[in-house]
Every structure is written in C-alpha cells, then in structure tokens.
Length: 318
Image 1 (cartoon, rainbow, N blue to C red):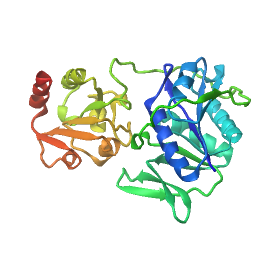
Image 2: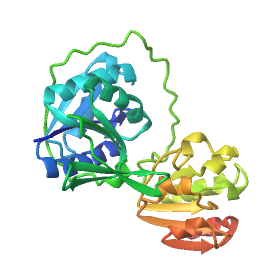
Image 3: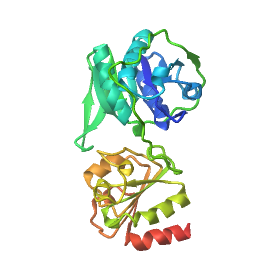
Image 4: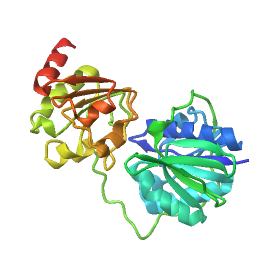
C-alpha cells in the first residue's frame, strides 16, 4: 500500500492546470501500488484553491492556511511538505516539474532522507523492481528507466505527459503539523508578467516564432493570429537570445515545456532543444521556407512558405 502526496500549485488564487495533470500521474502510481491520493494545498486565504483541488480526483485534500504561505519561499514550503508526507504515510511525494517544484522538492527529499526522480513522463510496473518511472534525458533523445530503492520517492512530474482525471469530490482536512516561517529567508517581490492571453503552459493553442522572423516587430503578426485563436505566444531560444521575444515566452529544454492541442511553429528550424519542449503537442503545424528544416520531422502539417506571407493570410482567413 502506497499513499501518494501531490503538492498543488496555484497562482492568483487559482489552481494550475498542471496540478490536475499531476493527479493523473498519481492515478497511474496507485493503479500499481494501491493506496490513496492526497492533495496538499499550502496557502493563505486560498480556500478556493483547496476546493478546486478537491475536484481533481484526489481521495482527500490536506489544506494548510497560514500566513507563512502567502508568498512562495522554498524555506517555508519544504518543511511543511515533508511534515505532511510523514503524517499521511506517503511513499511517493510529487509536484509539477515547474520552476517552483524544481526549487523546493530537492529540499523535501533531503528532509525525508528520500530518493528523487525528476521530469517523470511515465509510470510502470517493473517485473523485478516494482514501481518504476521513465524520464527523458539528453534533450529527449533517450528515455531513462529508473527505480528508487529508498522508502520514499520524491518526484517532479512533466505534467504534459499525463491527462487530468475526471472531476471528483473529496473532503478537505487540516493536517496536524507545526508551521514555522523561516528566519533565514525573506520574500521580497514577485514580478509576474501579466497578459490577457492564456498562460503558455496551460493554453490549448500556442503560436511560437523563431529567429527567422528577424525582428521583434515581426512578432506582432503572431500576436494578431493569437488573438484570433485565443492562443498563447511562444518563442525559440534563438529568438529570445536575439532580443525578439521576452524570456517568459521561451519554449524548449531551457524554457517552458508545453503540450497544447495545437502548436504552430513559425520560422522555427526545430533545434533539438526546442523540440524537447513542444513535441508532446497533439497537433504540430510548421511554417518555414526551408523544406529540410528539422521541425518538419515532427510536424503533422507543414507549409513551405515565407511566414510574412503565410501568417497574415491565415489571420485574414480566420
């Protein structure tokens, strides 16, 4: 029997899509090991987040409402997560493989004397070792099979590889753990980039531009197309490094991992680092003048044409 603790992420009082997808990961785990799925919400005045987590298919929700969690600090999160994991008897502790998850989960691992596996994309039952995981390495060129021999396994989940379960209804409880704010760290500010468009990692449609657009101004035509499709805007690292797009638009191994229903790559050659961040998309459309561009190797639909002609025409037709 193996309980799974899923640490939820939330922003501006709303549960993230990736948290629900992480529950999909947990469903795969308990299908092998048995046990319960417990969702953990750390926050301050975030009852709505706990309510939303209770509808994701978990068996119950542990909600800690404390001023220490009004703003994220790894020094505050990690001890609380570790304490709740012990209380609920979790043998797997998981969270989305986001910037936040990658920050605090190693600290949780150390506190629990656990093992850690990052960027998990699949759960399976190994005939010899039992519960095992798969994760991509070398920019996704290889898939590594890993098993943890520690009593507790901490995991960051590449949530784009998992489907959110059908909605459910779970009880919300308050765990009996002592929460103390860290005295060696202080929250200064959270500089959030706000946009009327969907978040890049949660959007159903993503339109990304590459260095082939040749200027920051050229991204304006992608924004016009995005407005027609209610899409998020992304960019290759080459475009970001060239100053054509801001850092928070970067898609790829060193950027954000996305898997929308529709991904439109405009003037992107398809370097392996970029493909690692978007090749899990359901449908991929590529627009590029180079018919030998690697992006066409993963595209469902490819158009060999100048983006400056194709994109405005597509926008006009829509």
